[in-house]
Length: 638
Image 1: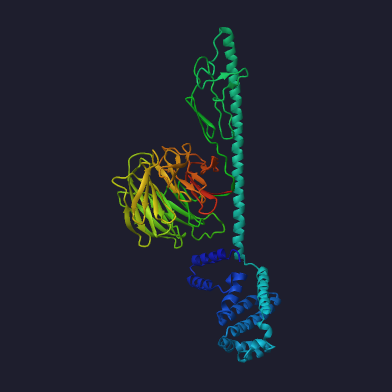
Image 2: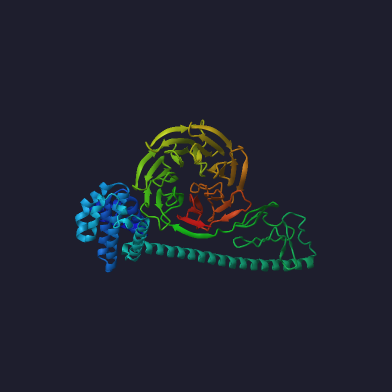
């Protein structure tokens, strides 16, 4: 039955809370057998006709049928009890028939020896069956012939299925099982309320923005009319020469008779999020500032050069959940290997494990206190069992989500205290840590010194080797494995990409990819290319067949400030198909680029502060965004 697992978890949690350890042991023992199979019809039929009868487990078969009789004994409808008794007789007779057909007469004798007295006490109809083991061909005997036919077996199978379906559908559901359904309903209602509140907030903000925009335009029109009036008076009295024509100086504008600026370079009425700018020429002076940038606008004028910027539409969201369990800016967040669990870390040194799906048990939810800033997170690739955590004080912790405890606490050397990234092999029980020494500077890149790449064994929790990078190598900020774990790609602060053969633990190639530090690196879905995000905001997709060839690129600089502080380390994430690329952002929105296509991309729903970390679900069109406003959001898009 639905919600059974959730109810069992509640019972287990209550017994632990009350200290009923003996009861808990008995409860766990009976759960392991689960004789009723959660009242799931298909499982009960498999148990009877595919396990107990074919394997001649007569004692378990009799016990199961007795269990259901006991369950129905308290029912107010005596018809159910009478029917299950009749079905019990037919099932036991089929057990004997199957044994005869299989040539196991000994099992028939064993069954009659154990249960014969009880069967005879119930009804005298069993008397002829005691002769069955001694008949040469019982299937030809008129008394038993019908029980050996295929039609009788199929009729029995259908009757048992229909009976249990009817019984379980009509069974009164315990109040404990209703809790999960009610919780799911409440969660759906809360989600709907959040979405409606979010939509209301967006509409209110849009209305305020439109009103402010309208007032601004009115004031500009009034101002330009006033200037025009004064200019006309001056022109008529003093015969002063009007403003220079647009051809005289790049970027200058000319007033029309209606007081509106002629020249689209200096006046832009853009859509929704864009703002307007209006510059008037006065006398013989040049037009004010020659540089104009619009918040989400279409163009930027700089010394006469026009740079077109993409105005991304907002994503169409199917649902969005917001997690508010942190008390400081989010530094990292990652989906588990299955996508059922989420790990998110904040600058105060805490990691929270949680789930966004109401149907997923919350038994793994936990808060981990690490005592230092969390710089990296990675889940074990083969399961959701282990979470690796890298900190800024040379610590690497391995958290077992089932046991809810740290199973190993490793340390890098004091020379390399900042564990910038951790990556688990998708095949072997190893992981690689990228640690860095401390540098001098206020920005993220300047605060890093030299690099150290260490390979660790996840069975012994000991270091295996250090990957060669040369003398005084620049810090490694990001790593990724290919699908079989044989190749490791690493990105450095000097703009280099390093490729390692993990079987030999040697560097096999590398090339300069950026003029600035690389913040994030990812293999493409077909692993014929590799993506890099530089601290300058540039995104490149590099061919692995033709080293150094750029297959696709985007300028993400308006979302990625190269002088960002330590609290914002830019990263990117690819969806499962490799068609959409999501990046962090200094803005409250993050861009989602369409990889390889001409379509620019989309923008996420807004947080209230910068978006500091991102990740994609391993199988679904669902992504994570963590923000400096302490929140983490799970967003599903079409």
